[in-house]
Every structure is written in structure tokens, then in C-alpha cells.
Length: 69
Length: 460
Image 1 (cartoon, one colour):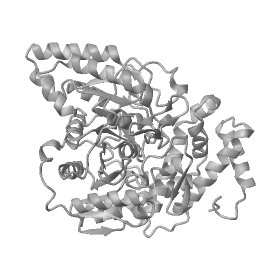
Image 2 (cartoon, chains in turn cyan, green):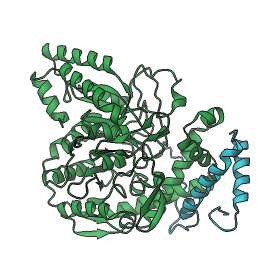
Image 3 (cartoon, chains in turn yellow, green):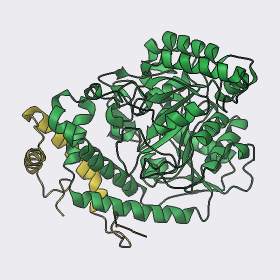
Image 4 (cartoon, rainbow over the protein chains, first blue to last red):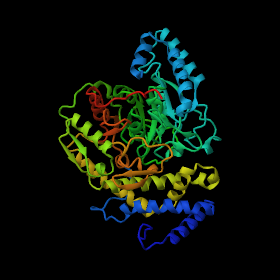
């Protein structure tokens, strides 16, 4: 998975992702806020890389598995 | 500082009237709160009415309850009948007033405790400092130039200042344990699913816990005992009978298998925090120091789950009222709402993996000890934290030591350790799921040994 924490994704890519993501979600983010959100998103991505880039030692069940018992 | 059990004993015996306790409490709040900014609402009329009814009931020979006349206040994400539940956000002031009290407010009131107000917090509970731009920063009673911690900062500071002997807060990633540590009071984050959240404003349904603050372990245990019990209004609340803890508090800790957590918990702690953890561990007879596996990944899982669920929950407000929202949290909520589902699902898997590994540790140990905060209270307005040569953004990292534990729902008592620093610093006493009794027993033991104590603020 591509991750902004990795070198293969540029800040320009993240800016575009934030702009498009907000538009899709219906958030009217003004241009002045884009830089701040990009900064937070990039930080989240660096932290998320600790889970996304780690092959779990044993495969887990899907976390939200529906159980009817 | 007058404790809850002391007040309840005096009111139950008729030695004091509840109305006198309430009047003294309201006077104290009026005097102290302008300097500390703990309260966002003072429920003076309600408190006086309740106190007068309680006094009349006692005179009529009825049992006034185990917490008779004990004043308490709640983080302003708890529903309080008649006022809007603002959850630290100015945008929520236009909400209609709550039609009923939150279940836990109702349980304390039924036990005779008297609600005197609602307390400041980080907006939406998304923060560790209670530097709320709309309602102002809550100040630390031990040094008003410093933060109280968050997000239940008002709850920690009001108890530390002696304005109320008991308060309620919430803890998603550390929001009871961080202010308890920085303000020097006792706080309990029970097992996930133990206490019902019915009638509170949510932040992250998968991680939200509610719990009490108090000035002694005995007060904390008694209040916690009054809060227990299932409620169908919270789908996350486990159907489990109440398991009272107060009676076993006097037991010593001989036979308890205690370990100090090291590795990650040392790496991200200052000398002061490490010393507090060592001092508490030694007093509890810890036989060794151990490392939990992959703690940084567990913390990252908590971080991702929080960002994603927190952002998703606030989407309607982000769409409608972005410009009016609290600036410290709104950009983080937007970024969270953009979290890819693959990150979130992987975080949940890591969380499940970590819980399984930590459960194995509890086959060998009954209690784990770790620092609660990386450093004591920092100055209000500070943006950065220097920790063992690493510069970190302060606001998200004050909970760096609490997040991995709440991520897997373990019960934790935060305990203020004495003799370590001029400023308060606390440790986490962590037990296996549903063993709050062990956390509280260890807290009471540390208090009896003089290792833990809630010290009132010196005159400021």
C-alpha cells in the first residue's frame, strides 16, 4: 500500500488527496486550512505506517466480524 | 482536603447537614474557580434543592445513601438535565438541553451524592491538555501557569483544588490518567465495557471509557462501586454483575505478582516519570521489569482508530460548521475523516494481536506498573515536548504512555506518587480485564505506605 510516510508519495500528492477527499466527503475546506490538514494527515500517516507496514505475526480475524451466537 | 467518605459519614450521622456542605462547596468554587477555570456550569440551584431534600429525607429516618451529601461534578460531555451537553465545543451550545441525566450521574445522585456542576475539557475530548480556545485553558492547581492535562482537565483540577472531592471524566486514550497524573489525584479507568456510557457525548465508541477521580483510593473505590452495573442503553456495556471493591482495599499486596513495565515505557518517559514508576514498583514488591511486545504499534493502532472514528463521528459538523469549530481539533478531525479504511482495519487487527499477547503476560503477573505521563505538567501554550533527545509535538504525545493500555481496554488506576518532583506525577497500576479490585487494592497499599498521596495545592 502506498503511504505518505514513504518516499514514493509527495506532499503535492497528499495535498491533492486532502482536497479531493474533502470534496468527496462534503467538507468545504478553505485553501488556508489545506496546509494544516496536510501536516496532520502526514503525521497520522507516519504513525499509521507502524501498523500498515508491519506483517502481523499471525493473521487475525477481521476485527468487526459479525457474531450471532 | 476533605474526602468523600468523611463527608458522607458526617452527613449520614447527622453531624453535618448536606445543605451546609453544598453551600461551603459553592462558596469554594466561587472563590477558586476564576483562577483555575475548571467549571463551565455551576448547578447551584439544583445542588441546594437536592441537599435540602436529602436532609429532609434523613430527618424522616430514611437512608440518605452511601455518598450522602458528597458534592461532585462531571466533565461537560455527561448529560445534565436542563443544560446542553457541550462536550467542550461552542458549536454545541445551541443543542437543546439534556432531557435526563447521564446514567452515571443518576447513579451517584441515587447514592446521595450531589451534582454541583459541569467541567471544562478539550473540545470533543480530542486532546491531552484542556487548552480549550472557546472556554479557556483549565489551570493546574499546583502551578496555575501549567496545564491540568486532558481531556478531563476540569475533572482533575477541580478535585486537586479541593473544590469537589469527586468528579467524573472520560478516558479514550488517557483522558482520566493524564490529568490525574498532572494534577496529583487518583483516577480510575475501568475495564472497557464495565461502566455504561448512556447519556454521554461519544468520541470513539471503540475506545471510550468513563470513570471517577478522587483524593484517596478509598473514595475512588466507593464511588466506583456506586457506578457499577449494566445498562442496556450502551451497546458496549457488558452484562456483568457489579463486583464491589471497597471491602478488599485493606488487604496487603503480599502474594501479588507485580512487574514494572520497561522498554517503550522507559524510552518515552523522563527521569522523573521513570523514578515514580520505580518507586511505586518497589513499594509493591515488584519482582522484575518486563517489556510488552510491539507497544509502539499498539499505540499507533489507538492513534489510527481514534483519528478515523473521531473524524467520522464529527462529519456532519465538519460539513456544516467547519468555520465555527474549535481550531485545535477541527483540522485533526478532518484529517481523521480522510483515513483510508485499510489503515483502520489493520489497526484493529494489531489491537487484537496486542491484546492476545498482553493477556499471556497476565498468566505470569497480576499487576503491571508504568508511568502515566512522560513528564509532569508543562507550561500552558507550550507546543513541544523534549523527551530524551527527541522533540515531539506536545499535545498528541502527553498520552504516549496511556494510549497503548486503553487501546486494549485494561483497567488502570492512576496514582499520584510522592517525593519525586515539585510537580505532581503519577503512575499507572494496570491489571487484567475486570480486575479493577487489584488496581484499587494496590493504590490503597501505596497510599498506606506513604508512596502515593493526593496533596492539596500550596497557596498560590
